[in-house]
Image (cartoon, rainbow, N blue to C red; front, side):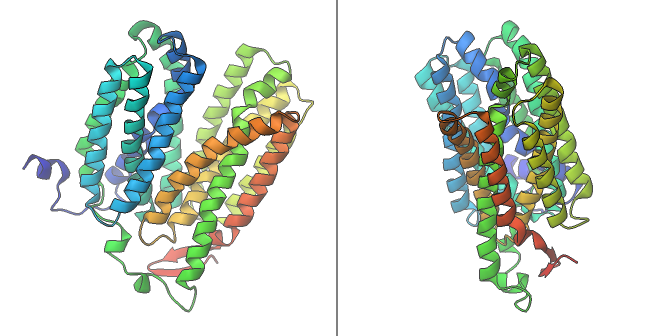
Length: 402
């Protein structure tokens, strides 16, 4: 009875409604909120819990690893469960895991807690991404999704350092648990099933315009494009602070510049939301990619403070402008919700692989080689997604833009 009231299981929902979109964005934020404030969490673990820097990094990595496993679990349950109930279970486990983390200060116990929270977060995030793929305008919703994460992350990075001094380290897990509990009352605005339960592949595709095998092939290219994009871009983002130090920019100034760049990224995501697919996806992706490479070229040494500020703001703007379009390219031709879920794995692998590859390159050369690596990977991602970006869905028919 209580479950039926909470989830309103007997009724369907309009996934394009305001409340549904709002719930999707909040779900996307709370599923990965801890990772967006990871830099200050790592600092707090070192200073408050007396962890080593390596141990603090392992705690964050454990949560990322759990999210990857959670994505695989979500793929299994995608067509086998009621989505609202599955998300409810995942969020409930996240609440339990965060409440447990609130009381734990031992490294071994905390890393286990965060791993299991990561599994539940991977499930909820995967279904969140799949639901965005069901919407009428996934480009716009993905942009709102990115905007919500950036805004929440920016606020967290700004206020948490001061709050840690007053409330201690673990309180952040308690706050997240409370926010997730409130989110439970919005789950009725999420769909119960995906496209596969409503539309058959034969009905979805027009064989005169595109064959399912063709679409499937280029959809996988889109997944690889997202991975490649993250590897190139995040490898640079990770070392921006080091590049600024190398350019002899003052440390306090660097922090303010990076904060401004993050805010600029919000405008990038909002610009994608505003434009949506009005001009197709090829033009925004190519334009954003070109501007991103210009930003990277500006970062080539020698650079001064003004060059650095312009470059990182443009870099952050274009990254968050392009990403919603890349995600939407895959979502637009995904009939089951499973392919778009795999973007969680593409993203996680790119987040891990980018800094690792950049670190390896730095051992043999300067920061310039990371920038050229980012440019090459950006070009490769644009090539991989270019064909898929040419298509859109009208009704249940796959057609070319224009």
